[in-house]
Image 1 (cartoon, rainbow, N blue to C red):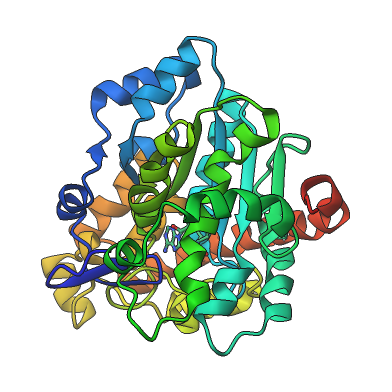
Image 2 (tube, rainbow, N blue to C red):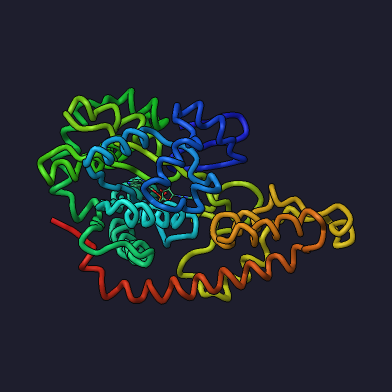
Length: 375
Ligand code: TYM
């Protein structure tokens, strides 16, 4: 948990302008260096744009994972989703990257749907609702292109029998003061939430338990999930005889409003994968920008892409080509590209992306059984 003055990052809330350098220091993670990127490139052939653009910027033990891999010991990938509603574009950032890692390293993926967590955390949600969203969200995961037979998606509720045994072993080493310190829980936090962090640690060790031998595990996620690994999984791993899980952390795709990450609780500034393309277009066209008060001023002074969410959408997802991205940046700075045109260009790309994703999502309905595992 981080509550630096000016911003907050917890697994349940990200607020304000996040200072990622400060977060690295506070969470005690390592920056992804040029040297590490070169090592990754040796195996992947090309660097994903999330690496090139430092969207994935921090890690723990990725060098160790590569050491094991180079010594002939493959690793498993683990990531997840808290199914509190529909998937938005921010959630896709770690999933798209996980898909790239699966493809390049031939790794199995264990994907956890924490329908228990979201039920316990949000008093408005019922268990059938969060379990239903597990399936809705799984369609988005599958639509990202993961490999059947190597990708195992499970809901905590439906896979509870397998998961609970490991959770109990973990929980014996975790005290109330630890979860209070790591997650900021208070005396009025329900006991389900107090126990839950043990459940989120389970899949770090699940491949090892299922296969009966120690398997290194790498977790791609945005940095908000770090407390689970730092505070629970890495702490208990040696006590239970497992490897410590490694992490690779991303920054947050911002919302379309002013400041803050894309968040499902702010539906007007989030683009959901199920939004009809026309609705998404309207959201993009009403986005906050780094533009000036009038077109005349903008032509004279230029825009401010560095603080503009619209520019960040190009940067994260919608301008893969470096030349294309640089053009947007330079034209904005020079006052040659006005916000209305820039948003209209982005809306075309977002609509194209959603139309394709929704086609793949529909297709995924036929393939759910190839991916979902349950007791
Ligand atoms: P959840 O549902 O809050 O988020 C799912 C994944 O999306 C990432 N994320 C974002 N990434 C970039 N930009 C954003 N605006 C953005 N918003 C969310 C999160 O970091 C996460 O990777 N408790 C978890 C579910 C979970 C999990 C895991 C996540 C269980 N096991 C292992 C990651 C790894 C949750 O509620 O995630």
